[in-house]
Image (tube, rainbow, N blue to C red):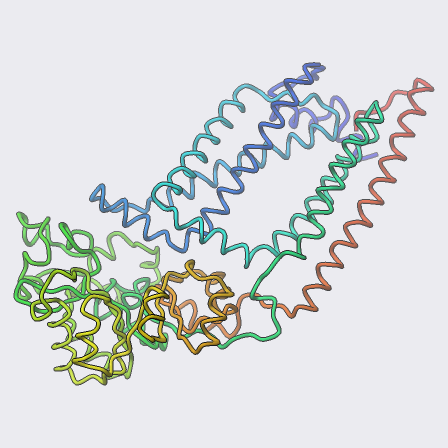
Length: 532
């Protein structure tokens, strides 16, 4: 009785629902069924796309720094572009879902599904935003689609359970439409469509393959500090690498370049404007801000501040967690030399892996970045096996000079051709099956760059040896993956959820049939019946 009163023709709740969806605050008996149906289908279509787009944004968040850096290289202005995109996308998805909920309530209380023109305009705008975002990903960030595909190994079991719940809830409306259909053909179409969708949802765990549904959980991957701990300190500074030591990292990952006087130093950005993002070069050298690594001597690089930018831009939204002392220390950071990092690694028995940003195959070895880097490493006295040599250029000459270096490859075929056993690749370039096969051959697999717990958990279950990460402080205390199920337990959850859903649907079907018969009996006796 309370529910009927709430949704009676003149109730406040019914008026609000009607007004929100169609902007008809008074009772409307608009009979434009085809137009109304098209509007609701358009709303459902945009809502599904918006939800899918939010999922893509959530998965790609692991690599949001790459997008921000790419846009910075084009505009020369740092802004958290990815967060801006996330906020806009979240607003669009929330709006669509709320409107869809109102539409379903309209359907349930038998109000005409007349979508107001303003909503149609806003939905079209939302569709445009999602389309542009998808196109941008496909053109400039195509590799992220591999990450999305990979993510289903982690999320598919939960998406299936969510689909079962949603299907159970929607079945009420489906059965209402079925019992209200005028022809047998219409009833047949509604029921068969629903049964096909239900069967697909209930049985999809048969094809779900997740490495985290296993009885043999591999060891936890070791951590490699990507440019140190860049969420806790300015990247590629000694403070950053010292902070990563608190995470018990196995290795430091960095980027090496040579100054004009052949001194190896640490800096990720390269080419023109390579100092613009992470130093105050525009203040110290006003006319040389767009210079390359050969434009500066080591003495000049030491004059630059390499920490203030971190406090100003807050690239990972973590500055607020720093103490006043840590902020002061960040602000005082300088561009470090490779030799300083080698001393730090040697003192704490940590390995070192690095890229040579300006190496190429056309330079003579004795005048190459590889030569001066090897000479610096040898003079440091660090144990050779602590060096994970990644640059492919001049690899053979480097190996002849110092055979103790661990040779690391970023292409499987190159590793196999040269008889190597250490691979360093992007996390999305190998499947769980590929990783398992490599580990069976005693190949060490390091993947980069892993910043989110769900991704770390998935790669843990897949069996990688180590991960390069910006978020070592997040992973260091994880004792287990965020989720891991024994196969029999997952099978039990799956079957139980499906059985409960079927029983609830059967109960709703009988209830709707009883309501429809009661409605027909009242109509025959000319007894008024409330819309609900």
